[in-house]
Length: 562
Ligand SMILES: [Zn+2]
Ligand SMILES: [Zn+2]
Image 1: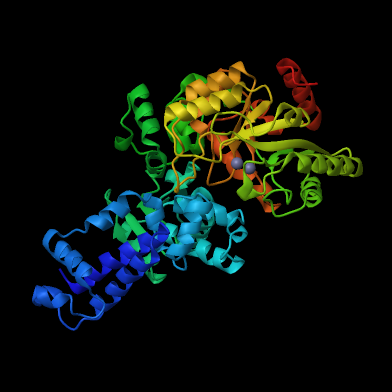
Image 2 (image 1 turned 30 degrees about the horizontal axis):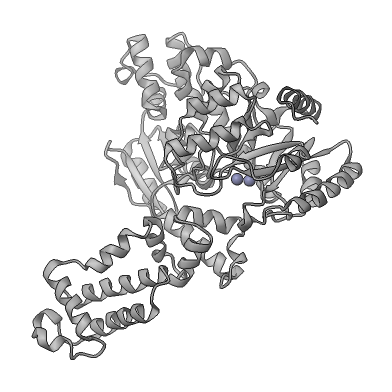
């Protein structure tokens, strides 16, 4: 074992001790030992053991540890620390500008245990509330995390969006007279994109030469297609085809496989064997109307697809209200008045302001007396901005017990409650279900916020039984949010058909912490459209009048009208 490796072990041990806030004298001695060992002119393994302890920075205790390391290849004390530190917390050591002491604050005070959550907290401006974290640190941490993530080969749809258009323009310039078609994951508007695919009606050699003229050298994918790696963007994969088989290629590469297999089986065709010049020709030959790429996964559920494909789907142009938003009253970036004015100027008819509740201390959650003050402001603004309307809401924490975060008197004073889990996210399915079902059964809960707490590419959600939750929402007249933040998109769109079957309303909500956040509605809508969510089944597509009527009816049914 090299001195360098020994030093790395000691250095990591010292950092983990600091992360735990343990005896700083010991951690310093390991840090110092790491430094000295690394500098030694001779390898420890080549020295006489007895001489170790005499070296600068190495006492008898450290000599024993070195012996253990060299003999076993491990350090029991280090293993112990690794075992009692969440993996995501250890990973934070790789974030530039975030030392062990700061990680201690992130973990113990902010209760953040993964890099994805930390990024989310940066974006919500939450780090600056803690001692030792200024705006500069927060920005550095965010940039460092984004960089790390960009290296991992997967991108949120929102992160890939710009590249898709850039690639398309570049290809159009390079191959003016060829057929160029976006295909694959990007054509299907998947939540997460690992590569951007195009078909091009050009021989492979011409594609390679043209791309090389732009300085991009190709690699080959496992399937033998051309792959071009790009900096901080998804790789571009190009599929060579001819004008004769462009339709076949477009169809097969668009996928998903579950759909292409379903078509082949149902129509007993082998599509790889037949040349179609376009997808339209291909669908025609099967006597099928064209199926949009983003609908192909859901189209496998034939009855569902047939029933919904003709309906108007929820989309940004028919979404009439901002449901679920935060203002400066809790952790938002703008005043309530600024949020309302922006919503009006963007053509929305109403704004549901749902700041955090009191348990969410980290996010400036509102104490009951603050809620009274906020309501006075809402009354004043509603007079000023009529007929536009601000609704009094709260994003109410679902406590560990499943209870809501206020007593009934406070809950009664609100127009509607969005109930969400924000704390103790690490839990068994049984615990998660108990909390969620208790909250759903609370008569004040009208909307269930981000059902699983997932953060795409960063944090898996807590485990839930989707069907049981949807059943409970149906039984209790609770709407299920489709949180439109591109990193959440929670509830997953694949559960929309079951929710519709149970006549549960969905609501595409931006969870906006700023005015720009309103625009996230687009990503929620893209996800919802994959399930063909009809506008009529989306609460935020209700007009102001319809929304008020729904509110009156549902509260009447639940007996919370007062
Ligand atoms: Zn939330
Ligand atoms: Zn929220």
